[in-house]
Length: 274
Ligand code: SAH
Image (cartoon, protein in one colour):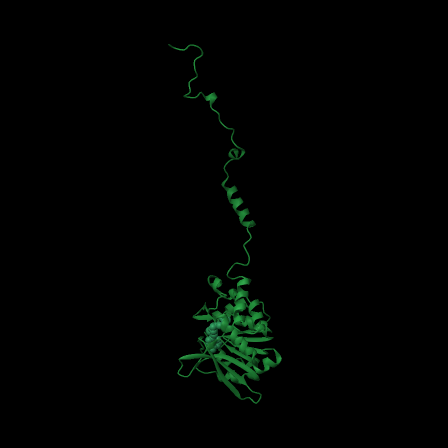
């Protein structure tokens, strides 16, 4: 038996007037503008503040290097204060900056290396133990042989009133000149020359420090050392199988006393300039 009355509306297909379509949202009504996304990304980037204190080239990492050197009894407080102040990472290639505060030597190009912090602290500490330096608390006028990247020269400039630093390689001399441009020339003179000849123009020096090692100590260094002054340099010893830190003290009467300290390994001291 069929039911009578109003015919039941068909459920499918739906009549268009029964279709419920949401009104487009305001965002969807906006025309597509890819530039907007780029602009917002730029705004986000501008708001982003890099975190401080966790980078491997940051002040806390430098301070922990200084704390390690202090715990090892290296340097003395004046040297450690300078090492806390001078940014070692600024003197090495950007790619090596994360390693700048590890106790390791690092390449600075042209086959040369920047000495490891413990050796730098040890050598500067030994200079401060020279007779005149101990009495005065000052390094006096300093001659450095082997400017390299300029890191140790910057430490010396923070510690002494006058530093003459010599480098034989033009490229490294120029690079150090840029890195150390903010130091007044009266305080830090960078010389391109053969450091085996010393630098007679500003001699005598109370302190002489070399960052390259030969088989003997050039006589010019001993001649240009002030009586009461001290020289610290790496030198091959005996059968040339062992390089040591040599400390030379010049007495008031001009006689010199030479003592070998720690075993080290420095780049070779070479004559002439390139
Ligand atoms: N103190 C430096 C270490 C540089 S390595 C630093 O902080 O980076 C030693 C440097 O000594 C090298 O750059 C090398 O070219 C230089 N050198 C070697 N023989 C030299 C000489 N006769 N005169 C001047 N520099 C010399």
